[in-house]
Image (cartoon, rainbow, N blue to C red; front, side):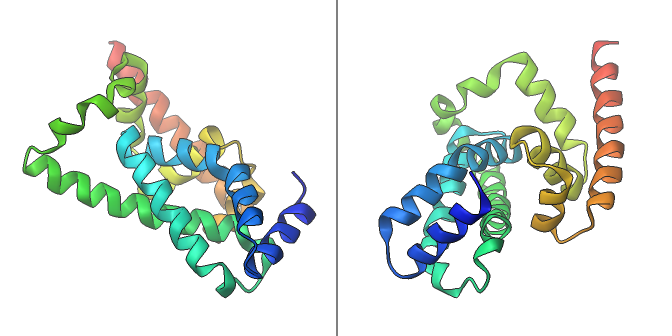
Length: 175
């Protein structure tokens, strides 16, 4: 969808149009979930992070100064929600309460997803965000640069290093 349509939907949302915000949600929900799922390694925590991010964005849409910054603003909110869910997950795991969520994480039990999550966990936080935005969400380096407030050339170099780390990790699993 074009950025002009997104801008119009943001402007309508800022005027209280709930349906316009719903359309914005539909535009980005798939990418948000993919990012959150791979970030948290849990469908339960991914759904929670996306829900929290959407609620925060809805409550604060009027504060967004530039409509063209919506996507980067939304993903910054999602990053923070994912980080919070990771903290909650750690607390639950330390209390062994996370086993109650097993029904929500069954899709992550496949070997490939488990290996991918382990490879992702070998990356720094910024590298992980870049890889997920690129491959799970399909964003280009220019878009990722805007979301993370870095140059697109920096995104490309960090992505390249991250992929080498992941490749090395995955090759070492099989040996």
